[in-house]
Image (tube, rainbow over the protein chains, first blue to last red):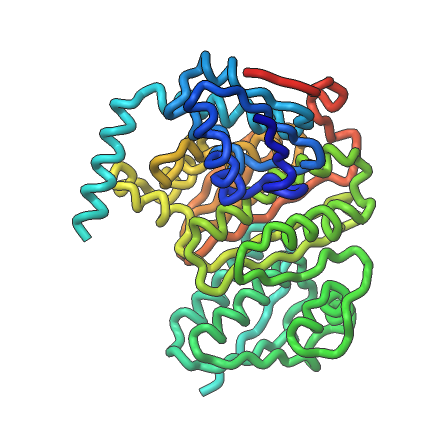
Length: 115
Length: 294
């Protein structure tokens, strides 16, 4: 699958809403083991909020090997690559300790339910 | 009833920010529906930070049901000229439209319009030729600074929006931008997590600046402020964040925290960039990144 990111974000890949749209577009393909190529031609500005939702959360259900094997980033400017690398590292760390994560989520849910 | 607020001289030291927070406190402690007059007789200088904050204060007063009356005749001509140039006068009902100069237009955003804000950062702040840097580096700076807006709109719960103003100070060779929200503040937000509920404001601000820390569960996040901090350090800029009763200054590869006397409900961020291309470097602008796998 080839996905032209510009068609979702325009020039600015900076917001979580666009990131979520891209995630919803590519995740079903990756989940089925299909390759996805993300073409960033025309996209010039990047922020972590976009990549957190578009890419970071993929690592919850796609393991690192499949992520590397199936996902190809094409024509991504260096400015975007720097942010993307940080987002991927952060996501790997976030999902690595699932036990810790689940404990935090449970506490937060209990706290929210107490109101 | 009408209260007169005397606007003091506002430059860029932490005590200047505290003067602004005192004005906010005075309004906050007044009854709802109170009207205010803003008197500039004692204001000998009004920096871009003061301009952005006064714009926010005017909205804050109106949001509380009061009316705002700027006593334009009390403003020194040089300050009035600057307020005309940056569009503040026009925004608040005067007839003179802004024009290009050393000011970065005053703006008020009620909602997060990505395209509008990016155009502001790229064209009105970075695109005036004050910083002689490459387009990719402009894009990188805009991306980092856009995180401030993203945080303000997503986390602050500001009911009146976000206020911005900037300025190039050619004598000092600085390019500045202030972004302010009148929401709950970063420390208050951080303390909404049960595990953080005991944090002091300083601890909370430190926590927020660390990589990967976020109050939002379910998606890995928490990089925006950390990336901005790294960027500022890397390019020898200065980042000041005032939020609730805490203040952090990031400059010269040093991070300094201090407690403030006034507990401002909101977040005031000022970023200072040096107008000298020698300070800027995009680690690998010339790398061929045509196709990447991780």
